[in-house]
Image (cartoon, rainbow, N blue to C red; front, side, top):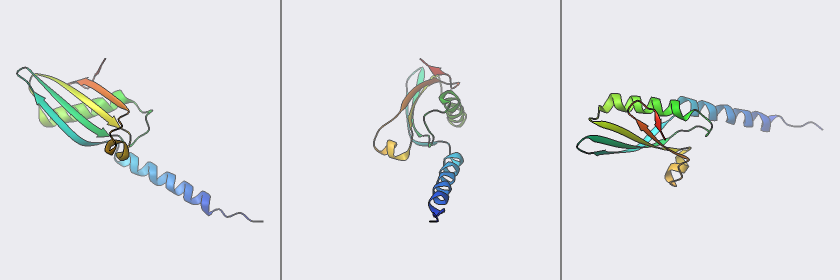
Length: 110
């Protein structure tokens, strides 16, 4: 009896398509909120990462914060609160997998 190779082919095609889509857009900022005070600025960023949880969060935080700092140039002491969501579904259902607090250089604060 001869088995069909189509299920394996479609499974591999779906996996390749999934990895192409997630690699082309590593993260997407869905929403941001800025709180300004006399001497400081706090920015909350809600980010869909489109990646598995096991990637380097410190590198992602550094890239996002440096881009945001370059675009907005906030005044005073700056802190960023990054709410990371794995997929769009997690964002819509308010299920973050990590919350990172960073300084203006993208270093994660404890």
